[in-house]
Length: 360
Image (cartoon, rainbow, N blue to C red; front, side, top):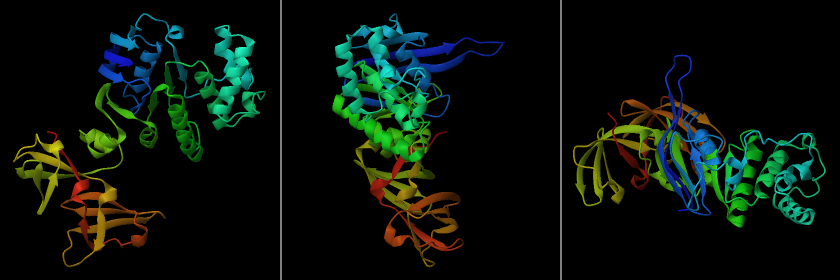
């Protein structure tokens, strides 16, 4: 492995009679060279503390950070062969674009000729040609973000660390920059560890995503794996939206599992459920976008409580099996709103259903 986080914990000492704070709790993670890994989770889950430990701004209470076979625990930040892009960009206001990008090269005493070549190349990469003499206050938020990214990339780091670098941008610019960062990473092949609280950002950018909660890892895997096969209610509810309907395993045959959900019976065939046994209580995970809502007074099994037309979709709140669930209709041929109070029939492809063992 290229970057290894080995059993890392970070405990902040108690202050003013309070309790110790366990910000990171025994986290282990292996990242291949050239991988783009996002750390995702709610505020206070430990993701930024973990990033700061990797960068050397914080030291672990226990555990090791290893890069390319070298233990970094005692290595100062500026000697770790890493660059960091901060949420606030941290651009020097008294320096122009070229001078900001050149800052690290000046510290390393890189020759003027080499500096010019490298700066010109990175300006082209981040689409800032012609802006090199502008002051930071003459740049838009997106341009400032590109300057911060260029300043990090020009150092040719082994690992690029990014701490919510797009959070200060407006929605459209943030969406565009996701694809630009991903394209740069694929073209240049650098290893990236990226912190975000934005699940869509993680889905677009990641080779792998790490979901953190209360200082610990809830799940680590590809975006598709995490979305399709969340291991816990927390992950299922944090990545996307999810309805949880109680059910019970009533039969199985090899990889085929039969589930009873109220009076409804379902069958799922997938090897991921091999450790489920007959009699197990489960939560059936129904994503809103897989639920099809049809007006049907005869065989109705749900009732519309709220409906909202959103242009590209219609969203429903429904009474189903004694609880409220949400559904999202995105088929453009079906975007006719069914009024609240209408009995409806729900259907969903069994191949898109997931289940997790019920939590006590």
